[in-house]
Image (cartoon, rainbow, N blue to C red; front, top):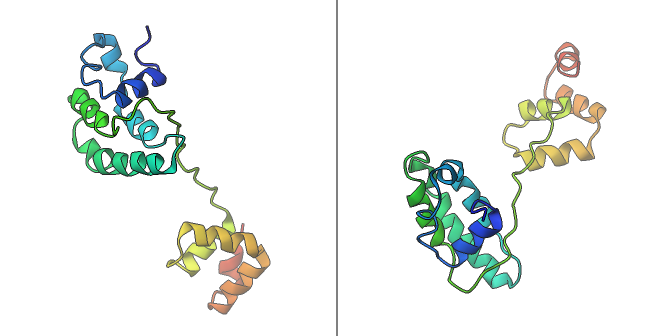
Amino acid sequence: MDRLNIKNEMSALDRKDRDYYDAMTEEEKKKFAPYLMIRWSSCVGGDPMLQSYYLMSANEKLNKGFFDISTSQHKKLQWLLSTTVSPGMGIQSHHWIPAKKKESQSKASKVLRKLMPELNEEEISLMCKINDDNDIKELARSHGWDDKSIKELFK
């Protein structure tokens, strides 16, 4: 039996199996990745109330300070913390939440960050979608940038 199969891990988490980590071989313990518990445990299918519970529970119990506990020395403690996420309502269908992809840094977005540092990434992205390079160059001119500086940034 492959204990480190994510379905087995999530099943043990949902069952609140506090002995799951202790039953692993030394090799499995070395391969065990506590970070995956955060990513997988926070997202379940089904009832929206249950989905909300898992998300809030994972955020409260795992995201805050989880890595203040040394991963190399306290994997068992991290496993035990992970088992507290489940409300004990049976085995759920867990889903992977991919990390947000970092958008490529276009020349226009770099200029907008310099022009308007108060904008967040979503706003910068939106500005790049609704304006072309000429619009952004004109905006830079209206902020007092000279053509040489603008040309240098858009190379």
